[in-house]
Image (cartoon, rainbow, N blue to C red; front, side, top):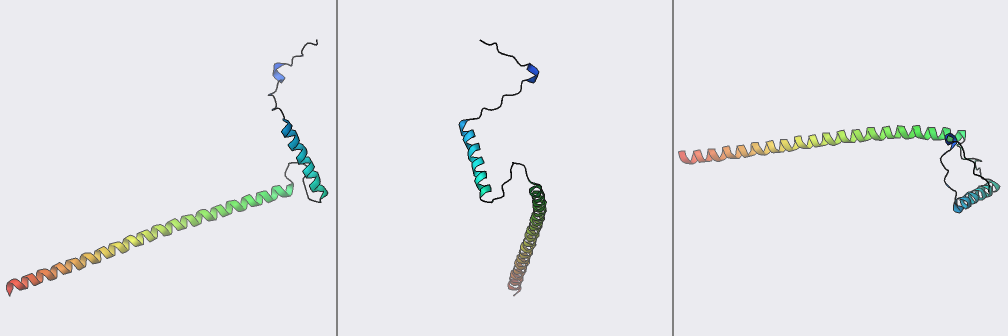
Length: 122
């Protein structure tokens, strides 16, 4: 029997996860699919890294997304302000209606009092 060789403790790395048969099959299928796509004249990158054009396009889209989010936030802010103004306008309208009803009731009371006074004098 051969004695086991021990590695120094400082160089021992965390064990890599064991690749299963399924992982190996998936990798083979992926390679075959990419090869078939290349044979069909599809543009398939050789590796997983982004191409410079993809990185630039991604950056442009991220900037566009930020701009659109800012526009959306501004529209939401404007909508809330309009809603508050509408509520304030509704409250003022309700107050005016209440005030008008109060003045009408006050006038009706004054008219009734006038009629009562006229009845007592008459």
